[in-house]
Length: 317
Image (cartoon, rainbow, N blue to C red; front, side, top):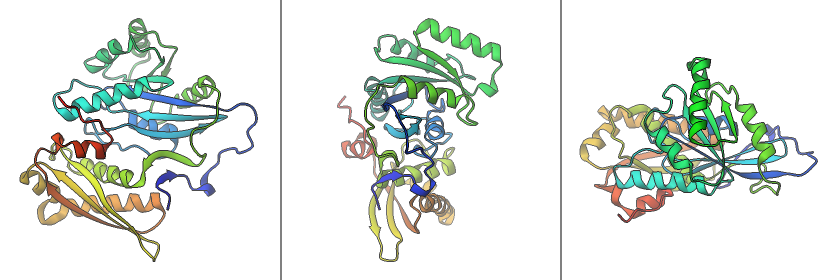
């Protein structure tokens, strides 16, 4: 089994007889929390590479989703939502988001059209003014907002930052997404592709598996379990019968949180395990034996090792 997430070649409908120069590059998606970045990355890539939940700040590190469109390989960088940081983990996530933007060929700012420029979106626009990369704007959830309000929102954002293009999209139903892909395929620099054609993410499978379980944890307990929980894949064993045994640990900060994660008579952890195992089996195309453990690790949010595991730089102050 490969350590990277790849498409099944039998399902890959990409045209392998392309002619003309190839294009490739990195596109950083930035935005406020819950703007829909992960949903959009999954939509543009055509497969699930980033977890989605209703809980804010679900994405903690940069997740790269790789899409092929016409002659271009487009590497989307799903960054953590940008917000006013309060804790060490918050600061690491916001720093990572801006760092990803500065490393990209193109920055795509995603704005929730229903929320408009309230709160963090306005702050992000201010921060973008001095960023030299090419910038495009995508107004998301257009099916929820009147057309005249969308036009006004686009005008306000473009008054604050000079965007090369503005797109009106729905990450949920795909409206306007083909226009985004056409534009990027044409505008990214000419050059060879960075990744094999069948690879859709650079996330190691052990980390992807942990992310999937974290998603199921949030979906099941997002109103009960505090933000401070973390999942790590500790063991991954390929078995002779073609199955894989995966052991993961859910880290929480207090005994009371452990009780929530386990649930009455273990019902919560069983449901989380079942949902995660089902999705992992579909992705890996092999039987999965998943074993989840819940451990208390006080103040794990101040542990440099946990930050390295998440792909974040540990803030020293």
